[in-house]
Amino acid sequence: MDKVKTEQIKSYVVVGGGTAGWISAAVLARALTNTDVKITVVESPHVPTIGVGEATIPSIVDLLEYLRIPLKEFILATNSTFKLGIKFIDWKEKGHHYWHPFGFVGNKIEGKLFYQHWLKHQFENPQFEFTDFSPAIALAKQNKFYIPDPKVKNNLSSSTYALHFDASLVAKYLADYCKNKGVNLIKGHIQATNLNENGQVDKLILADGQAISGDFFIDCSGQQALIMHKALRVGYENWQHYLPVNKAVTAQTAIEHPTPPYTQATAHEHGWRWKIPLQNRIGNGYVYCSDYCSDDAALALLKSNSAPFITEPRFLSFTTGKRDKIWYKNCLAVGLSSGFLEPLESTSIYLIMKTMLNFVQNMPNKKLYQAPIDEFNRLIDDEYIAIRDFIVLHYCTTKRTDSPFWQMWQHLEIPKTLQTKIELFTCQGKLYENQYDLFSADSWYSVLEGMGVRPNSYDPLIDASSFNQIEQAFRQSISALSNNVAKTLTHDEFINRLIAAKE
Image 1 (spheres, one colour):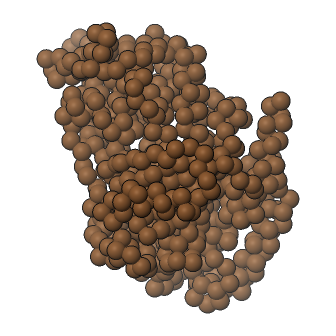
Image 2 (tube, rainbow, N blue to C red):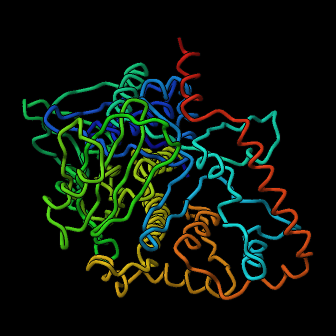
């Protein structure tokens, strides 16, 4: 049988700019370096950037490394600060707070999970909280920051970090990055999408009559989903019954010092409020459920819990869920066009980069074989479901009953996948293994413990270890963390040194 060489894709069209569009174009440009593949971004001059994705998770550092973008340059160009985790305030109950750290919490002891040793400690002689053993939280509590040095081995080495940044500046930075790599930008409003006889996207028709042809299209047009929804009619799986918050009001306030190296998420009567510090300002927002709270009430709450606004407040609406297919025919949905999981754990930008990195690892030719498309969609679906369950965990375990919104959570249906995970955990602290779960076991332990979900017992194998020796190791670890944190720079000092080094 003669071998058939299928023609390669020669042109990609990214529909929409903003963070999703320019990350997509940047990943394509990096993956297709030294090829003659044409990449075009079509950006409407009439659609403003949402600009809410100002907090990230540690994978943002991996993205910068993939794109070969110098960390210092990016931080200075985007008014970035560092993020070691999230401080959750008033979620379990009013007056209570807990931490979700980045990086590891403790280390295995005698080959057994640190969490299980700590769990026995809680039953026998409780002195320390689980996240007391997190390097990230030891730093965050003191407003300190440290990037682990491979040459220096200490118990801060397992800390990891993410960034807070100005999303509009990130889009601008990545747009310049893309242009330097030969990506073509066309400013224009899409009037129509033409399909070919196979139901694939053939060309875009702009308002000025210009036709934009391509072999493959990346839909980054936001909630409108101009191609995936309006042209290809791919449906949307609504998850509002699991995550009922559906609106947000945002505003910026003046910078405050010291600058905390973490995001604050404070629960309120009808939802929760974020506070994200940048170098030059604070990002604030209130995420709420419109069934229980009016826009006016939401704005009043944000104003009463923030410094004076330096920008006009903006209202956003969203429907939590995901597209039925993220990849369909010759179109890939990225960003809000693919779905939305509320910003509680800062996963929006992760899902953008993960979608694109998975895509370039499975980059098609013009044949567009169905089996790889189906597998791609299955893996992305698993990612979305795992993140959804982790976010629901923060709500469904609350003890609050002080408002109709929180009372609702006492009887609201939760996903069966999450219910199974919680039931398994409450027996002996074991977690259902899911290789596609973005969040590590330590993240789950931190939130479960923070929300007061404690197993009935610990792993019996832990009794094989000397309890007194483990307790001594705990005390030594806490002391070493404290000593090492004391030697580090404050978050502000670290950023100021970066700026000074640039000059």
